[in-house]
Amino acid sequence: MTAAEFAARIRNREQCVGYWVVLDAPVATERLARLGYDYVALDAQHGLIGNAGLLSNLMAIDAGGRSIGLVRVESAEPAAIGRALDFGAGGVIVPLIDTPEDAARAVSAARYPAGGRRSYGPMRSMLRIGPTPAEADESVLVLAMIETPDGLANLDAICAVPGLDGVYVGPSDLCLAVGGRFPNDPGVADVFEAALERVRTAAGRAGIAAGIHNPTGEQAARRLAEGFTFATVASDLVHLEQAAAAHLQAVRAENR
Picture (cartoon, rainbow, N blue to C red):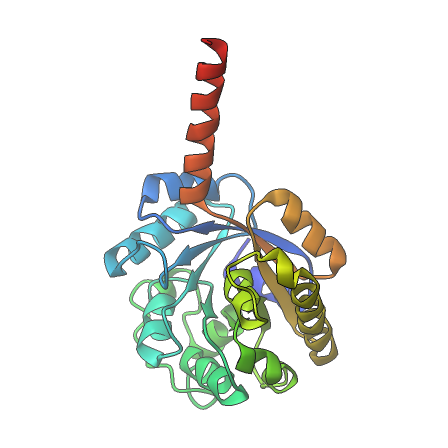
């Protein structure tokens, strides 16, 4: 699947499943990218991945040959978005989008003139995406994270921003945004679910994709069944710890 084909799937609101990577471990990322996930997202905001790691892991995803690499950038700044795209990302997930103006700035940073202000310097991406500006614009996605009180309040206006391909729920921050004391706070479960429905509905009205982050495949399947367009399973670091803990528990259980 090419970046252009993946972008078309998301824009057509075809359901996709991805995986989330926070570790700078290209060999592991390459193995994950061979499993059949539609995309693998690299976390450059909270993850442990710097510039060199971002490039190496995007190359690893492409070497895997089955997934498209996305990047959650650290901010909507043009330099962060342009760097991720120049490195070869098939799209950016942009955090902390509070207003339609924030979303419009993110879109502009990802599109070449005259539709945007992305600077031309696709040092690696031109090998796979583009290489002409028009082709690149058609092939890369811009996804705005909905995770703050202001983002929820301005949801319809954000979804209506021209050129925005989708919205993406950060459930931990969204839970805090609706009054949770901590992520997954059961005390705000009903309010949180209502917020998710608002996101799905607003995206549907605007004709754009709605995605969400999930801790397990089971929850990802549930969110897709509810109407989300794409769902990410997270993450390599958490799953490594969980697998190691399960093996340790099994050993100790057999030797009691």
